[in-house]
Image (cartoon, rainbow, N blue to C red; front, side, top):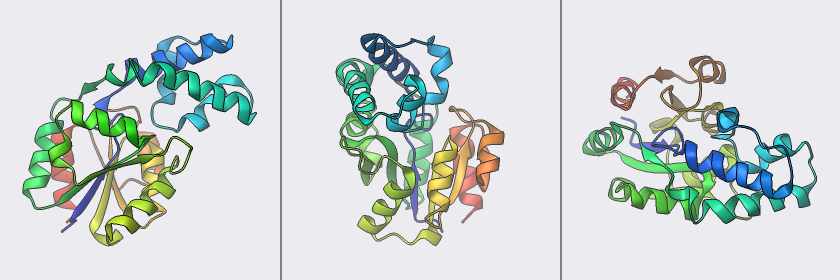
Length: 217
C-alpha cells in the first residue's frame, strides 16, 4: 500500500486564483510594470514566484525580482491569503485516504508560513501529519528539493509514497525523487501537461483521486 501521500496545495486542495493574481497585479502596478488581466496570469499558479516574476518583468535582475516578491507578499500576507476557496470534495477525499491508514502531507512551493495558515483556515490541519513548503528566503522553492527534504525528514520510502498535484512541477519534482504521481485536471494544469511530465494517473475530481491511489497500491 502507498502509505504516504503528498499533496500540492494551490490547484489541488484549494483554488487560489483571486489571491495570487490580484497580489501579482499589485506588485507589478507598484513597480510601474505592465499589469496583465487576471485571466492572463493563470500560468503563474503553481510555479515559484522566483520563476514567474522574471518572465513578468522581463529581467533576471535579482534585486528587481526580490522587490517584486516583497510587494506581492505585502498584499498576499494580509489580504490575498484569504482570497481562496477549498475545492468541493477535498475534505471527503482526504478523509477517505486517512481512513485507509495513510499519512498525508502538504508539499507546496508556497511559503510554509502561508500554507500552514491556509490549511488551518479550511479546517484541514487535523488530516495532515505536517505541512511542508518553501521558506521565505527561497529555500525549497522547487518541488524537487522540497520533496527530497520532506522524504528525508519523515523517513519515507519513495516506493510507497505518492504525489498528487495539478502542474508539471509536481510530477517532475516527485519523479526526480523516485515517487509516482497522480495528476489532477480540476486545477490549473492540463491533461497534456501532466501526461507529458509523466503522471501515472490523471483524474478530473477529488473523488477520482481516491480511486486512482487505491488502484496504484
